[in-house]
Image (tube, rainbow, N blue to C red; front, side):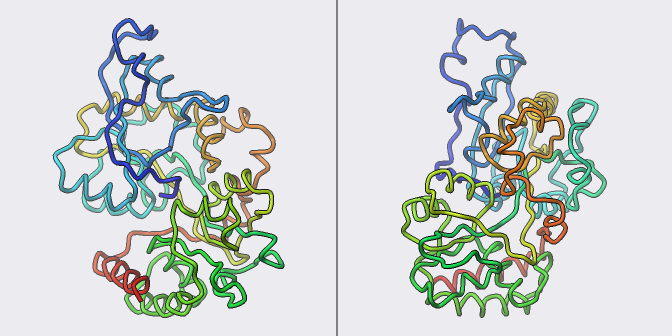
Length: 357
């Protein structure tokens, strides 16, 4: 859910053209294809000394990856629901996985074909969205946090209240995602954001309406430019992405709300539209090889659930609590569930109204 989002939805071959055409030197015999529908920029691309993991998969297995990207879980859902396009691997977030299972839109995995599942830590097996452990292999995880400019914010924030600080009026950014924004407001209203009612949405909407006059703007990807160039004081965002921002501006720091935040995760699943299930499971298994999982972790700076990957990570990543928050903090966090369709539609409607006022 929660990545540097690609705003172009297109099908591309994940390997370079030189790999695709005959005579390119691939070390494996061609063994068909796998159609992967993913968040944008979600696999190590072979830059800055990192492996191109998609090309490596093709080279080692002979399976061509057709990679298409989406911007939101809702876009993923709508494509699966209303399109005739066939996908073999998808990577939805926790609440969307619940919805897809409930609507019988996923295939059960054959874990015999995914032996690297044994590398997944117990916290990320049998996830709340998949309590029987039939449909998922966790790929990445993280928490929401705040990024702030130390030259504009006097002291390290300890609560989401900072996003309502009148002294920062015109310098506050708010996340342009209804589920995350509503959850932040719900926390401040003493509501558990895991599950919510229309009445809870009303309270959160009122809280967001109080914040609206203080905001510079609502953002998603724009948060990088705003914070890295010193154009805003504070913003809520995903911890792994905050780590990337801090690499580009030494005046930036981070803060976790002391009473917890959203623990999110994305997991590999196979939709019922799948036409290449064995190749799909081969792809999932390859991405959970410890050395491959480590490459993706280095690129994303999101937590990896893969235990074996830790030995391939530098200490500065393993010790970075933006990538790996400690267990004590994780125990304070909540995880989104799939809310009733009517409540979710109401949440979207109210969030749009707040933004428009």
